[in-house]
Image 1 (cartoon, rainbow, N blue to C red):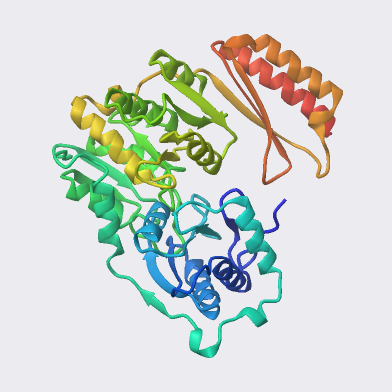
Image 2 (spheres, one colour):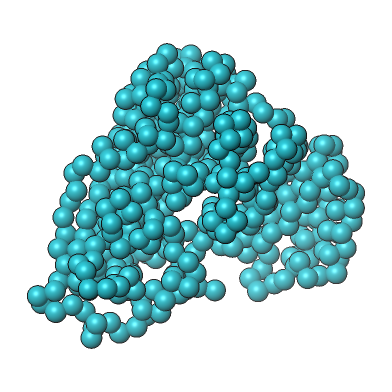
Length: 447
């Protein structure tokens, strides 16, 4: 167990868990870890639109400059943009200050290496060791302190990068697009990118005030987007989350399209264009069995990993896949980006829509999802209900009843004393009964 880092950087309540003192130490520790060679070291820092971003950014700058690193401040920028600019600007580290889809009270610190990828567990452990160490003797001398500088051209650089993921002759002319930026990091770049490509753009969630990020807008609250698409008879709605590394799509009928359907669309398109580096994609254990069957019908495989985009990416890098993602809308296209990029994923979908000249509802309905039921069971801290005989027996019986045509996923939460029970299969009534039986066995033990 790590003390500070979770599955996606360091995250917690701003000025509670994520304090100026912690941010200062993270800057010093990460700066020391990535000082390799005699060159002048630099770090790029981006953030979303939370009020606490000012406090955390200032503390990080103090930490990095105190160990001799120059800081390039990007301002509000999507997480994938920070990863891209880390590589583009030849920085030694990239930092994104964001708690993604969480409410404004939370914040986080995500760190990228010079290659634009999130850090390995080993590097995170080394940073944690230094956070708790006495670094006074390792601070830079008076003549070697770093400088901080704000970079103004980064929005245009990221917009141009996003546009170049499409063929040069492809435009979005004739498409009416509603884009919901969640009052977050993409509030400037996403609408402008779509407009420059020729779309008629209606933007919502583009008035951040420090408090309203993800509040009733964005990919985790798509009701506003659905209403606006229906009101304006738009061709498509695109919802990003607070740091724009995930996307949710709404078709012209106001129906939601999740990450599984998006992966199906892109996988089929890339297969037709001979762009898949492997004969399949990488998803997580939560992706619908309908996606796996659909891909199988195309002659494509699907590898499943643990929940979390970092696990998807790790498998992609290790085994040479260039497409993967999560049902939640984290879509990773390693030909373009080193992390999930909601805007680039949306552009790939729009390119298919334009080439096929078909409604989004038809393009994105690749398969009928199998009935899927998910329930949570809370248990006392320190308990191990999954080891109890009655629970083991219930799980084995549930798997037998579902047979080869269904799936049962039992997984403890990584952040709270909760066990998640998910089942799917062709028979919804059977799936519901199976989940209820396992949940009942868990609750008896937990009680």
